[in-house]
Image (cartoon, rainbow, N blue to C red):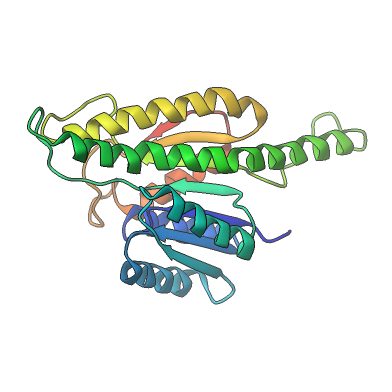
Length: 246
């Protein structure tokens, strides 16, 4: 199996680290981690390498993803170094109090750049590649069908995906978290449109809603490890579901 790359935007302790380590241990040789702070990324890189092992190739990029030019430059470098990703995992968000009609509109616009605009740019950049990967599965399936029994179902060699983390806020907004509620609703709309357009072409596009409560290592359900497992099961199953609620 050729080396496969996982791109994680919004790397950090909690869900980001748990998903990265689980996915890398299951499938990926290369991992690209993107977040704002270099010191945080260094800790994430060390944690992922310690858990998965020295065979993993990890690259980190400290980037403010609201800066489209800087994000593009980092992705250019990552693509050249490790190849374009088979899976894009988008986990970036800014969680701050924001009272309805009291929050500065410039802050809302900044949150939109994080939650929606950066994701849109990633989709623009990588969707053609993900479709190309999906097409290789179609070609392989067609070529093997003549030699396979009618009941056999060969596993796809590639699993192109664009996965996004969210919460209950898109459907159950909290006025005291107005900006995050608003941008998460817009993000869900974007991902749903991407799913409607590209899932029929073989790309797994969808949202993981962590909707029951705050993420905590001590919680039996909403702990990062369980969320990562549920996310992997949903990714691995590839049954066309747009969203999964945890």
